[in-house]
Amino acid sequence: MKVKIPMVVASNRMLDTHSHGGAYLVFAAEQYRFAKGLTGAEVAALFERYGVSKFIMDSFELFHIESEQNMIAAVDDFIERKKCTVQDSQDFSAAVSL
Image 1 (cartoon, one colour):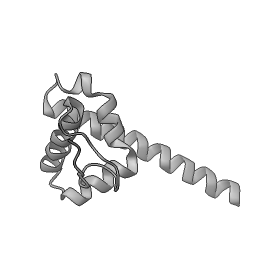
Image 2: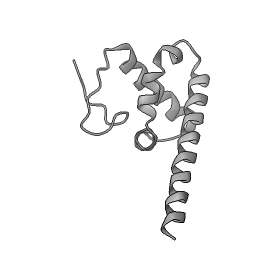
Image 3: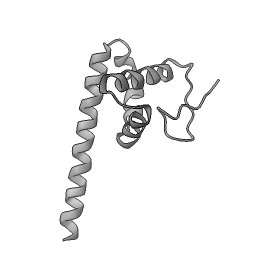
């Protein structure tokens, strides 16, 4: 059975919450939300902007045996690396257009 989970997954995409990875993604998003004091909408926007859902799913085999704190730290590191990449490309685009 597939259900829509707009809080975690981009709009109109389906997530099989009966799979181990799908269930873990929901768990990870909720843990991240509580740890950071964010709303579900804020987590969804953050995960969508930086591709965090894919990162979590790709790292499921490691994350599901680690502590929640390690997963949250890894997500924070991933987001920071993505922010630097986005900022670098914006800086480059601005310099080129001068």
